[in-house]
Amino acid sequence: MRLGLAGTGRIGTSHAETLKSFDEVSSVVVADVDAGRAEAAAAKLGVEAAADIPALFESSLDGLVITAATDAHPELILKAVDAGIPVFCEKPVAADIPGTLAVIDKISGSEVPVQIGFQRRFDAGYAAAQAAVASGELGWLHTLRATTLDPAPPPAEYVAHSGGLFRDCGVHDFDVVRFVSGREVVEVYAVGANKGERFFVDAGDVDTAAATLTLDDGTLAVVSLTRYNGAGYDVRLEVLGSAGNAVVGLDDRAPLASVEPGVQPLPGPAYPGFMERFRPAYISELQAFLDVAAGRAPSPCGAADALEAFYIAEACEVSRRERRPVRVDEVRA
Image (cartoon, rainbow, N blue to C red; front, side, top):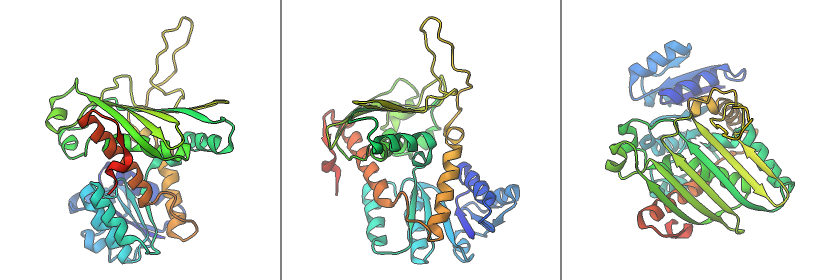
């Protein structure tokens, strides 16, 4: 297979390196709006560099991986689908709900597959939790507790264009709540706080947030988010049922410190960030895309799934701003 990759930033370069390592991939072609950055990445990885994004589409591709800036996602997805090229695109589909709906409308009915990058679905722990729920071994669920706690905030420029903590960060938790539980979120109540850098306030964002989600069968989910978890990168999910529980992310590198007498600390070190924590999941996700691109499997996470997680994030943002419970149906277009 000959695969293209648009966007050679940190995650794009990592994905290109992963794609190159697959036996089924004969060649990788990268491109970027910054041609110099693409050439540097290509030289470092030993792959090809296209002169620019239009040239990438003229490279006889069997599949395209999109890791460019969010505002470029819609155009690149649609251009690939129009050209008959299977697409993998990092979340989100677009920067907002109308943009996401426009993409979905234009690709509906097309046989060209589109996979959206929610890598936690391919993490061994989350997959095991989903299987435990589906098997019934946990009984009926009463609570899910999800956390995404970053050790340090991203740059101010990133925050200003991120869409906010719920859309940028919490959306992963919202997706895995749906994925693991097999249920839909019908109502949210969210709050946020700022005790860190001023640039969060300037961007209309928060650096810490919590949301209570009500699922369609009455199960409750609690999501905690922050940009300031000094102990390290902490991403976990607790799935609590009437007959048992499943906990994702409770490994030797979880940045947790018990103060109970006689309890030994976890050996660590804590994961420094998402790339290290989810490295195996990113590999599995891209391996799944090869099956999608080759026509061996349907997309495991389509644009419609991304839209559902975005609806929950949007409802949380409305709830935070207006300080009230918000039905997810309120934000559906």
